[in-house]
Length: 557
Image (cartoon, rainbow, N blue to C red; front, side):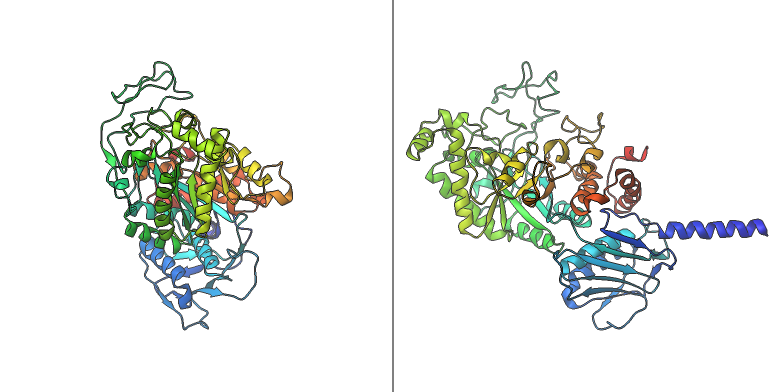
């Protein structure tokens, strides 16, 4: 009997400890576990108490509970005084410097999420989801008794997806947005155009999707570059090898493409807005425009060329031209951007501005005439002229441009936001010029790079380790307190050269998205990598519940 009693007590203690275990990502500002209070039990009779103004958040929670646990609970907007077996969503009148702030409290009778904004309530819902069991066979469903006060460190918490190199349908883009929402990200950078495909319907210029949305093949294997010099490739007849010596290019010859109609774009925007995510569209210019030039060759510096939608990654195609900085081109781009800005409510429009090869402007008689007419001495100044002219138009529509750090070349446009990908120098320089900056250095924030030194999947060659992502600090040490405020936040980027399907997107995204969410949301002093790795094991179990693909190698140690 004594042995039986001891075992029973041990099991009760063990169950209680596991039931009260809390592993949240990102780590909240303040977390208190009420270890002496019985957990809240959620069942079919539980009600969500919320006003109609919070129906978005209550519906999100209801849908999640039904999808993963098979529990259908109801919402009541009239039972505000009910205190037992309820989840209360409350808008308060407490003034806060941060509209994303929320408080969450749970005990054996109720769970309460309060905030001064509906957005704060939604972020509290994401935390509540992480308090739920990670198994759909865990009944009764218990929520630990906790008290949480939480708000983000950075205002810009972004994630990017390239749909030009490989196209992903609307259903998956929505799923991707759900991943961001669960990690309290608030900006989705949608890379809609590039050399390899134009993915957004522009009604005034139908050839952008009739021609520009399709390519006749994709490079097979890694493309030549640093670390890949000894790999052999096969050249297509229409391409000239300008890659490392003896390297030639092989493509698979499979037609690839697709695009989003304007109705589909609106559908995705609405979906994201219900998750408090702003979509920033990117329309690349003046480079990375081969898909555009394939459709409208007259806008290039050598219109007599037969431009093609690029089949190779990087800057390897001899036809990797740039747009001519002519009045005709600007009028075309203004018409395109008008349709884009009419679709997207975002205040920000990303216009690219990166990797523009100046050789095309240098050898173009028309480009040189444009430079002379505008008093421009260098092709870098011509790039600045190009970006400034586009910015002036975008600003006239009440919007602000974001560009990759190359827009600093030749002089930064007056109101532009700089997205720094070539290290931190561009972001630091932008802040010193009193401009907002978003940090996304390739060596840490490009999740298309491998997660391990020896990757078991085809990726960009230089790895971006989970620990390096987690330890990244977006604010450069050389900036003083005033300039540090201009670092708006940071962003992860997912380029799709070697990402052809949703499972590979998940594999590359997780768990680095978890690390990114914590460095952007949680207080700097709260970051603790060993503790993060411990919490990550619970997160992996949640991903198993959600059917998300991730590398099992993280479970090996």
